[in-house]
Image: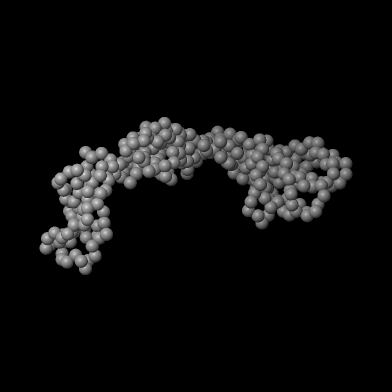
Length: 318
């Protein structure tokens, strides 16, 4: 604790830090000229980590030296990490993310308290890159906010309260191509009681976009935030409406680069207590950007048939 001003008794107040390794005779003394100081660091690499020292702190001012505190024993720090992490591996997981994993340095002095990951774009300098730190001693990290279809260089180094250790050998990883920019279009649905048969025009990726792997249909009731997610490999899906009310549906393409642009939302109404309609059979549905041809054969009951056309040229039905 620093000495309060009322007990400094004059100008030029400061501290004298005296220390010696256990078992030695002479004291080393260092002056600390700030009256508000509460810490002092001394570096001597000739001593191994965790060496015990005797330490005492005295005071002085322009009149001379004052008394010293009681002698206490402290131990030298371990030092900054001395080895770099090894077996660093990195892989792109989306158009904006790269997963990085590594092995920690061998146990010994200078143990890391955490890790710092440096990453920068190809053809750029390391100094222009960005840095992320792991929470604690985690040996993996997900780099986010990256550019799509871009090659990155990555290094990892340990750090502790003393400083940083050496960096690992740089590895390279490339983010995936961006997800498709085209949204699913020309949504059409046939409602049969509790079920909705949904179809849409397939999404086609551009050359600089990730290939479509499938689709994700999001279904939620109006006024609720939670969405049910239905995944499908084809441009169609069958949805179940479990309760009465208005349902909001949208569709996204799924790719290696992530999810694409959402379709326009459609709304489907299910009346409370509605019974399932009987024996509705869809024989053929053909959908294009310019026209819709359909043939429906039904034996009894009624059916709800709707479509959404986003083509400004419109379409006709037979």
